[in-house]
Image (cartoon, rainbow, N blue to C red):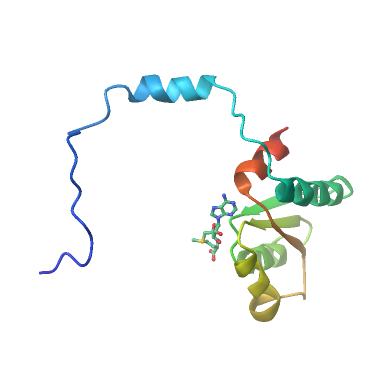
Length: 123
Ligand SMILES: C[S@@+](CC[C@H](N)C(=O)[O-])C[C@H]1O[C@@H](n2cnc3c(N)ncnc32)[C@H](O)[C@@H]1O
């Protein structure tokens, strides 16, 4: 039987790292200082303006890929605003060509890095 092409894992660590708790807690206590990417700030501002002007439920479709799931969510929840978010313009660009479903619901797709987008949304 073949092991496919996977490399075997070699490590001198036999179990959970002895300092795992300490390391995780150190990072939980530290302020995350990575700057927000400019393109995500712009995308967030555009989305935020639409969200503030909307009075119904909001659904974030994070990592929406080509946005097929966003279109389906919009069909299923016609009273909601669906925001599909993905970092890949290559995937998002496929939406209009292959997946656009405009017969019901409302959704928007934006290119953004979710690590930054979620921080902006929480703030
Ligand atoms: C496995 S695909 C899932 C696509 C889609 N949900 C579907 O079911 O077809 C994962 C997606 O997550 C996106 N992604 C991964 N990390 C991301 C990040 N930090 N910010 C935004 N999108 C991200 C990728 O670009 C990719 O489209």
